[in-house]
Image (cartoon, rainbow over all chains, first blue to last red; front, side, top):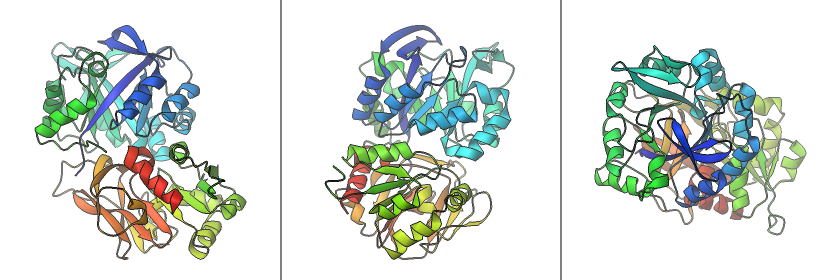
Length: 251
Length: 211
């Protein structure tokens, strides 16, 4: 039986590891390579690394740092941030990433998503959707464009149609709050897509992961909790196991 | 180290992704593999790895365009060099694939590559089948040495291997029980990614280096 994944998410800004709250107030918390090494040693299910201001600042892909991170990972690695062209995807995958995460580019151009997934296979294309609640409604949020008048599920369904392999769903308000995932948001997605959903933003304790998965998340991602609390990915998985949710404990 | 142990492993570069990950998993086991699509290097290797992610049709097209089908047939089928197929590399040894239309494969095993199809009974199961899933041993595989039965390995695929040949060494469940590994003489193939499956995965690579 397929296991539910617990995925640490690390954020890069100027090649430093940072942690944000609500997409703001960044704190530098370490070096990406050593962090990747620690997560590998902790035998995590997967790792997501996002360069958070790459797209905004129009930065080029930093192949060296991706290579360094990938060299530490004997588990699946997803890299995102600033990927704009097919050539960028080649570079990131050749540097050792297994999947790439796209946020801004497919929002502007579904054709790009379609081309990428037919060239590289949808299994390596993660589409990231950031969500903000505005006037009681869930809307897609983009750092460049702000709040867009699109429901995140509508966008996710378009992404699925155009070849996305997974959706990384992040609530901007919940992100870094440790107040739990946005379960109301998750409920919109339950049984609506045939591709997996990774819910991100807000995990503050192991029970938050249980609630997320019970409400339809295929995998849970988190950053803050693993950097700043006593909880490890393994603690989360043990809590899931206690609730009869299938997980991998590893060797 | 690889030279000392007499191992010349070639990882076939046919522009179908994740070569570096596979290379690293050999390196971690002290084996310096060569990434190449040069028939001469493949001929001189004593072990051959066909990794790959992506679609069956493109994979086969690239093998043909790079002129690698003949040398692979010769070294794996005639000269019986140990062969490791991973993910798409496993699928390509089948007779036929149905991804983006029907296309022929290397035909080393009488098998078809078909899409997961469980619309009716398991509507909530996701495709691609991505993540960790347990691998249940159903027959001996030389590369399962020191691997506990039902250990979890990392999968990411939408199509699976279907065969009536007696080569299946493990099955995995995702709506249906599908073939997650085979061994046919010198041919080893895994639907999951040993290079991405942490310690147990690295152990499989080690077993291949030592076989």
